[in-house]
Length: 76
Image 1 (cartoon, helix red, strand yellow):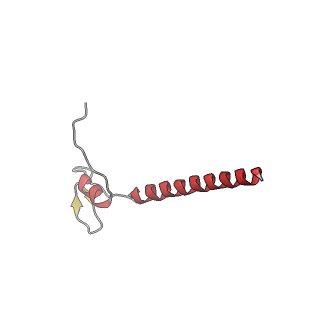
Image 2 (tube, rainbow, N blue to C red):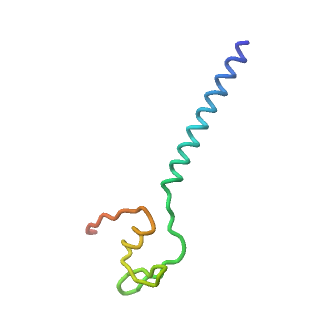
Image 3 (cartoon, rainbow, N blue to C red):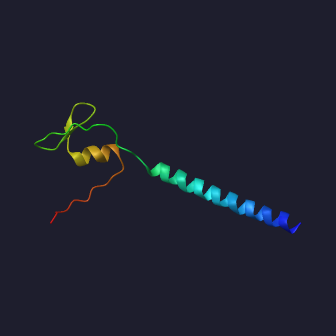
């Protein structure tokens, strides 16, 4: 009888852990937005050609196609 009760609690704990993992994975999946493919980029000015054929700054393109936020600074 004790083994059955203990087994029930173990199953309940594992089910709870599984549900928590599933929730964490679903949350992480919602936050992912991936850039894919080849980006045509100008060799001189570094602008990227978008799907409409217009050239725009790399930062603008990435901001429009992802949730990335740029923080500008100077490299050493």
